[in-house]
Image (tube, rainbow, N blue to C red; front, side, top):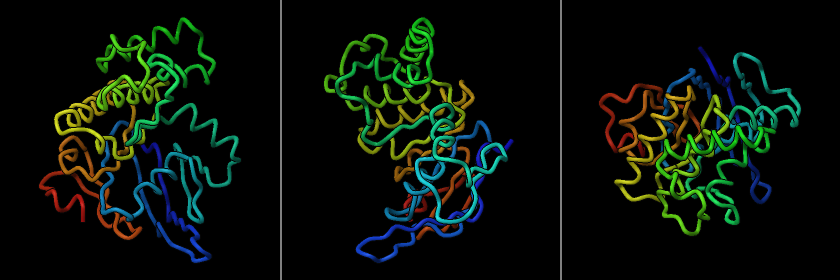
Length: 237
């Protein structure tokens, strides 16, 4: 079943009055429950495509469908509410709130949704145990390692049981062993909670966990395939 679909998405930015085309005619479909890798060289448009799929930004032209409902003409308030309820994010630099404990960082999206305190406690404890940080919930981000921060970020992204998780270079700040553990955790928990995961990466090791790869080059989607036989060079080029 199609969760998210784009048709001929185009996006440009203006730098010093010069238009810079970032995406050109991107057709993409994400199926419910799959783990998809988005690969390509720096500057190819990966983050821009993530921002469009995550309803953070709007395309210049083209269409975006959520469960076959077109979102292009919807109001910003509608898109914000849809994003708040159905999409979780995991970032390269974690994006945790520094003055909040791990517990409060995970609970924050639940508070925004108006979930009761009892429900929040049950959800946070369950997720903390699942990602292996249940003994660290009172600590602020500055007192956690990079891997521990990313585990908090994954728990936060999953807290509202999102239909889609968008991860932008989630292993870039982690050592090799921690990176692989974090990716496996993201994949397994995504499947457990029924979330589709779209992850942008330069890390060839991550592709072993993906069901499918989407490759961007100069703003064009040039390849859409399974991961079988993919080499490290193909991830980056």
